[in-house]
Image 1 (cartoon, helix red, strand yellow):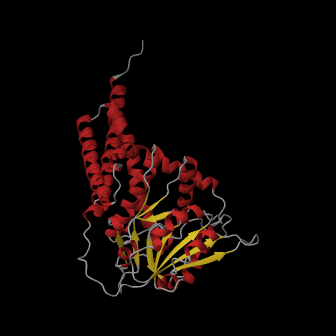
Image 2 (cartoon, one colour):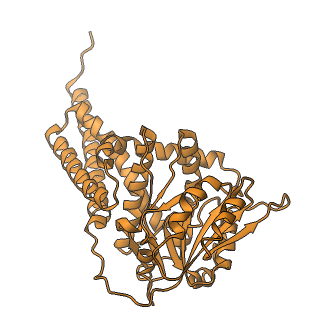
Image 3 (spheres, one colour):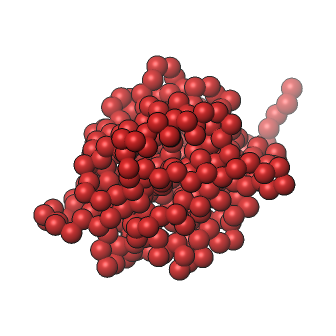
Length: 389
């Protein structure tokens, strides 16, 4: 028969209490970090108020740049939404980058009806491989206008006012405009997760830009000045990175006073989502290649949200199992959930992503884990630095 001495029992109780106290502190601190992100950054999007609109008679000429490789069907389907914009003076430059399908013929079929369409062709050369940044550079060189507006070949402008709304913000001070590029609504859980993931990333980069901490943009809907591109050395020291023609350029050159946002419904673009988990993971890996090159303090801010969320749920489980301060734990959990859902419900109206908030109840738990697995697997298997897409 084992008899524990009082001192031993007291020691065990003390260590258990100390452990649970530390767990509770981590839990409460993680909740505080979460609430800071929701109330300061994410809520900034639905609360944002645009300056009063003025009738502008001097609408600045715009060059829309689209890079395409083997995108014949997407160009046939979506290019008219770009070519038929309600804007007085703009050109559309499509860079046909080594396509092996009938992209050239599709683009040629548009030329008779759309004289403002220009085609730049890059022929395949087995001695020279390149990524998308080279095609982007060719398009920028070909542009004749100061304002450059970027989207992808699988993107559709949701309204004929897309160019007008994105270009309207440029002034003597504003050099970069960050837009919203969502994904089309399809059936299936994967589509819902892709839309949720895109939505949450947008709340982060748009909210931080509203709070004067711009750190990235997406190439599906992004505008900046041509002079800024050449003044800052273009894609500079990250030409070898698979992605980064959008987010790394913004990260390096956006500042609190030269960047603004545009995410009203008529300024959105919608892209074709990945149809398989494998293709989405591959896309996500490509996007993650640029993250390590963000400015350090940007990485600390954006990394604190998923890290604190993982800690929050782990500590919550430990505290509930132990029944330690369970009333307080449930109260904190409930408060965070109410604030999260309130913010997301308001934000989904602004970004026109109906139904996202409901699925976030599940995705909120697993998305940090999914992102972590993809990110760290990417660091192990990183290869193919010159792949275009």
